[in-house]
Length: 333
Image 1 (spheres, rainbow, N blue to C red):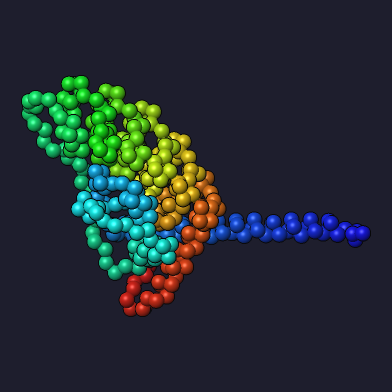
Image 2: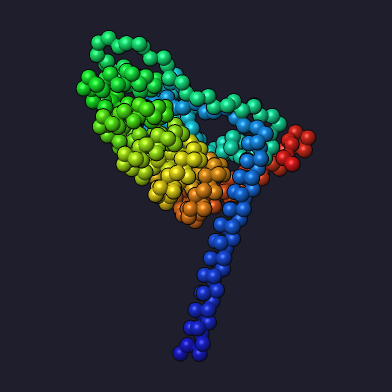
């Protein structure tokens, strides 16, 4: 026969254990949030003094599944066409990835002797349009015009009855191309002539994915007005929010969140946008996601939470810092 009060003691003990676990989880969230706030403050301070050149847009014609994997792991792709042709791609181990994140994205905010001065982002200028187009516009010239910002050529093709959904061998339409490049006027004309706003290319990416990748908020808003889906997924099961996070487009991330993008949506590896933001050290985006309710305890398919990724980052950073000789690194004041 059980002793009097024994069941009650067991229940009290279990409640105590649960309370301790919850307290530990809360402490972990608080710790990670504080660390992120520190890194964000440091990044913003250094941005006032230094910055880096604007990244080159990816080559649309050659971007395929391996390149999407690279974008997920390392951020925006800056490789030209020749660099992508025939290149073998081997998926890196998690240890290699963490080391690269620290070397490229972490310690540069903690110590760095020199940085190149920032080059102001130059406004994209379309190539001069021909005064007159003689003869019909071919499909290739139409698609090329969407990349080059040649509004007159696009207008001629559409006026002659050409389909606005004409695509290349990668199923990329003029709308995909103009969205990536940020040619709002061309996007408007294509949509006005009935272009399919959520047309999927070979990667299942839509114009919204490409606009987020290119960093063009005005195009994002225009596509939104025409009913584009914020939560559509590509072959990696990535949403436009994932893409904007990986490429560091903070304003677009904020716009997507405020207009109903699902911040809990996960890609095929179980990563949320917050996992990606932490992995790539997107401090401003991390803060935005947390403020709007992103779950820091959500696990991906590898069983890792965003907090786990912060802990891995901190451990590797500490190891790097401890190896620095006092006279070879300058800590920020």
